[in-house]
Length: 331
Ligand code: SF4
Image 1 (cartoon, rainbow, N blue to C red):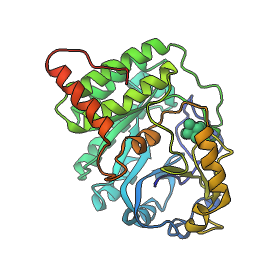
Image 2 (image 1 turned 90 degrees about the vertical axis):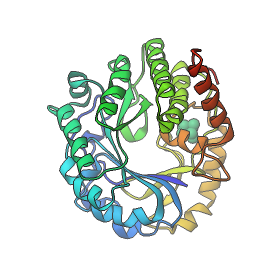
Image 3 (image 1 turned 45 degrees about the vertical axis):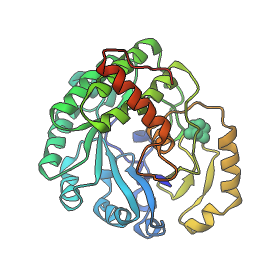
């Protein structure tokens, strides 16, 4: 199972699309190392996020606890305190770091309420690269103000040897926001198509599969049904700073248990999990998030590899690009 561990709701960005920074958690109530030690070995992709995870004074110890249990360990950060990540990357160069960047200097700093965010993030990622980081990148939340900058953020990431990922603006109870919405879907979809084409034409195998991932983002923006079923509560789950385990971060009613009060095994065998899984199958929201897409694209037999349908789409479109045809966006 993949996990998103929200280790704190404290944050020093003031993003327009998220009010977590106005609703911080109290450090003394936040997930303890003892609670995290209850997680089993053999987890898939574990994302340590917030709020802002670098505000946890024990972030190194959190990584020490989680890293041996996970196939991939990721830290999602606003990138404003890169020096706190440097020792972690020196110790664990394979820890994946994704830094939120919402466009060019003006756009990023305006959307995220960060006075010098853009420069700090770009310089910070360079520092992490110099520290030996093997999997670093920027992450953008596509919205009206930055949709036309998708391709330039991808190029900025490429120019410093960093990766790039994208997700769509959405609401969730954890953001304390219900009015996020994309007004100009057509422009956003066109920009995503340009990025998918750039990914497919690149020489990076990772980017070819990233193209398939953001194909789902285009579908969500256009209001189409996702190609893959949601696997919340089965393929992935969220743990909040109070150790509550939720199937997803969109519906607050999908509470599966509490890791402080229960063992992981007791949570997974509970009637609450069975109820949540039934509700996920019946869920009518058309979510596309990196966490859904990652699980849905993966082979059930060999989780390190994509499934056949994904490979077929990538190979077909690589061939089409090589002979000068357009990428097929409807899948
Ligand atoms: S589709 Fe439903 S269950 Fe799945 S992530 Fe979205 S809201 Fe949660």
